[in-house]
Length: 169
Picture (cartoon, rainbow, N blue to C red):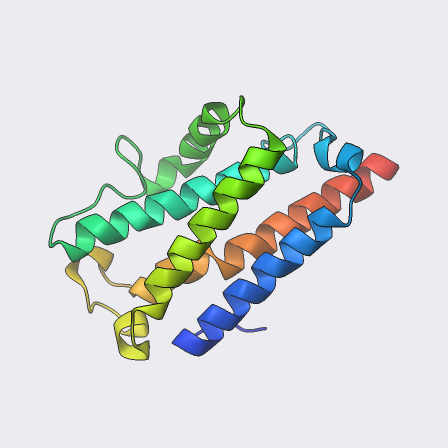
């Protein structure tokens, strides 16, 4: 499906991809859900991926809150640039190593609902008009929300499926 360009398609694809991700995870045995991924991936298990998604939800919510108040948010995060996103993702990974898979699911579900609420508050124009908000620079609010939701959930599902397939070899 093409990248969403309307509020309706963003809400639908975000929910659809989120549900696909959760459905795939939930059809696995608890043992399979907790297995480590093969060497070579930064996120070592499903919990790591879920907390990665959750933390990006939190960052987008922070950008939104700061930006909509008329200030310039630290994007992607304080001390990081878009070029150092891999370092940021490693930092995120380290922050949640003591989080259980059960907690990760709970946190992700909550932050997903919060992101959906942000989307629901806006019109198509508010979401997808480029340069509408000073804090989004040359892009749109919707572009950030697509990246943190539907596209990110698709990435997560593909990574989990690839790890599962690689483990079976």
